[in-house]
Image (cartoon, rainbow, N blue to C red; front, side):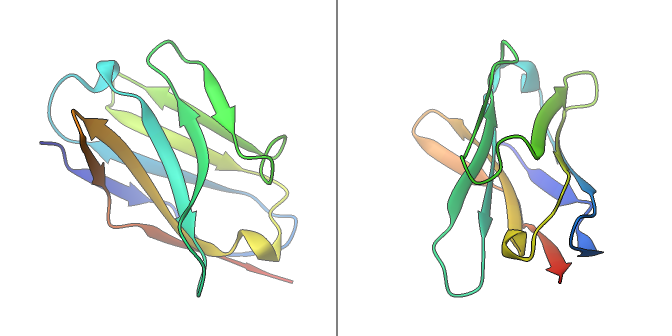
Length: 115
């Protein structure tokens, strides 16, 4: 079992930046692949970024070059630095991870980008 708590969302103008955080409970955080997803109103949840235990990162094409995923294993925290935000980045952002065949999700944090 793991609990994930996101924070850092808010309202920002287009072109601005936000940094999201996701704190994981429990032990063995360093052994977990961590991901960020997002869900815009009326749309399906979509994958945004992944960071592996070896710090390899992967990004959706829509955010590549603008978003950066990172982790601090000493704080059980994964981050999503979001720069050059666009109105189409407006969504609820979730962090998630797998334990076995089960995916655990946080409650999400709202990001709203105004034009």
